[in-house]
Length: 327
Image (cartoon, rainbow, N blue to C red; front, top):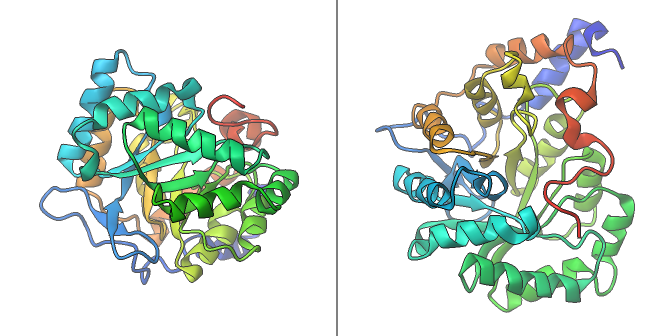
């Protein structure tokens, strides 16, 4: 589809779908008050989480471990309570670094990590859970999600007898996680297929940005379903995953964050490689004001004629791509 040639009425319909519920959604807070980091309700649960979360993948790539630990502490002191990770990030280094940062601070955060079975069974998943808990230096998670669903085969394996979904149930029964979910960034069709099983997921993580190659995508198709079902909608890839948009001057980090956070979502997972990154993002969210629908339309219109290559700006949608190392 040539996005630049879409009739304006069709484009406006797409923007309307993407921002549906923006003014009325209970997950959106008013503007930040008192300079703090706003929080939003976590789906059906009676608790709130910060509107941004610290991503463990980039936390492990800072100049030093000391800086990573300092980032965790500075984020928490600023009001960020969401920490997100995955078993396979940098062969476990992501969880190890975050675990060191959370030592003595665990009770101040909502801690999430992901199980990276990619089609493997419940036994593999439970082994990964124990390894994640050890690395993170905790006895329980707040959210445990199936990582990077990317094929029909993985979905079938997840729900098959002895599959990873049974591990989610087992972990909840054992008190090793409070909530469960799934993630993915290849195609919204896989998210919709997961949801079609009717399983009681508490959260779903997906790309949310102003420049998805297809108008009918995560914003327009998946997000409304999550809101209707009371599932916490978590965003990622607000800058495309590698920030090439920012480096090429086509988008600022502040615009990327504000666009995603102006959607009816719970929290946005943000990759930060330095204290400077953290502080800049804190400044944006501590003074957060949602974009107006007209601002969001202007931003998506700008990219409608610009994006013509998934490889260039949305490489996370390419077949075979995963965050972290494959099993």
